[in-house]
Amino acid sequence: QVQVVESGGGLVQTGGSLRLSCAVSGHTFSNYGMGWFRQAPGKAREFVAAINWSGDSTYYADSVRGRFTIDRDNYKNMVWLQMNSLKPEDTAVYYCASKRNTPGWREEVVYNYWGQGTQVTVSS
Image (cartoon, rainbow, N blue to C red; front, side):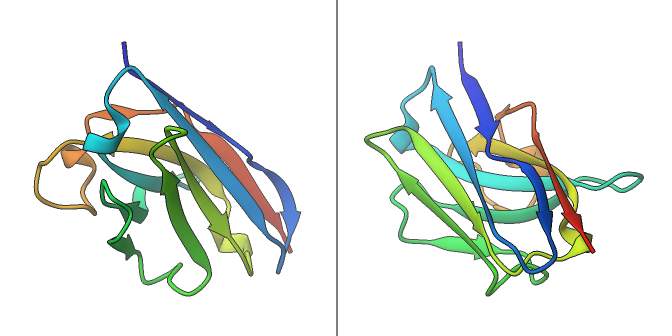
């Protein structure tokens, strides 16, 4: 049974930083690409960042590029999202997801397994 578990969310002031963690078990982690999505209240879930199986290719939404960094450790079965210079508009539930070799990175439908999400709130 595949499990995807996010942690690290919380309340932070504008300009602050948070580092989200995602622990994956139940499949061969190094065979899967990983992504982060977020959903703000009243809005659709949106792509944030993704990383390929080896970690040498990363993808970012325009809204977070230069502020967020995704990385992974295939020995620890972990992926992280370092979020710097946070803004109130970054407030959302953040989800971690894994995908096999389906083409694409920014679409929810290409991801196979999802976590339950972790809340990030940025106060102004």
